[in-house]
Image 1 (spheres, one colour):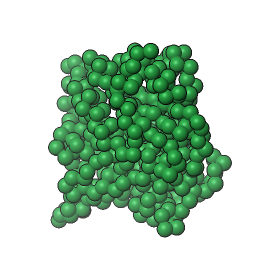
Image 2 (image 1 turned 135 degrees about the horizontal axis):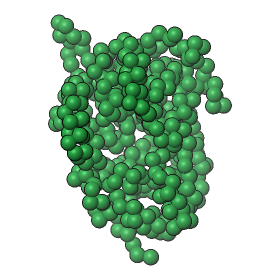
Image 3 (image 1 turned 120 degrees about the horizontal axis):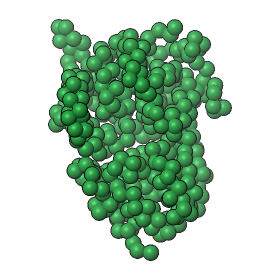
Image 4 (image 1 turned 90 degrees about the horizontal axis):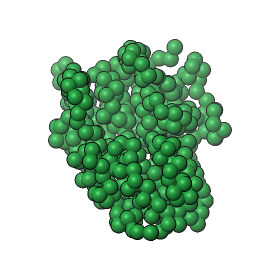
Length: 392
């Protein structure tokens, strides 16, 4: 059985796993020998037909670590995670697939299976500080360093909430759940409070070791307190893939704002129809959480080719072919694609969300948060919401 790894990462989405690879490539993790994978040394280049990954900055090999995948239940996310796991193994990292959902006892079994590794790790990397399961694992952490890598624009809210000392709540979440939900919240409160304390850097005391906290992000955030911040400029992605071949058309990027209850489905369809006509779009890159029914309706209404990527969009775009213009609603990619596609000649445009598109059940914070995502995007072209609300 493999021994515990000094660096342990927990990921629940393909984007989180991509950003863990970027963090390792940047030279942040302590150097480690290549670990065992199912009792056999990991072999770079095995599994995907892709050559072994490049060295990190300065020509040194990218740091090796153990990555624990805690997969969600939806098939698209699981498929992308398996592809990303293969790329991680190509880089020499150990990947452990750990089911933590799908049954009442699954979380407890996973916690028992991971407890030893969590306690032994010197560095712990997490991709979703809002995840209740990750927060539960954090109660066991004794690491000297805790790293948060991007889980998309949620990082912006994480930084803001920890700076204010607030409870960690996703920006689109609306309170509720009735009496049972409130009971669950009260029961979970001690775990949440412990997780918030873990995200605070601490000096060494007589009984406790020092703890460093780092955020590795492409988002426009500012560190607070003793937290450190480093920019993720997608150096691994740029070194590993591309540059892409450019097509003459425009590509649209889908969003799960309808699925999360933030944007009205009919308004979203009208906006996509207008953007398709005005910008001559031919392809629609679907978000992994978009429903098949919604995508069918979009295709029938617009004639767009619906593409369901098997990897995060940053890698798909970097590999190409990709349109000379990419249009997105406010989302993570308006911050990450300019890094991944720097120097390629691709223009990234972001279309604002009209407040009239928001549902009655949208979180009170939704409007301000989405506006902030757009306002802080770098190297992108701004499209007012009216550009997607035109008649015709």
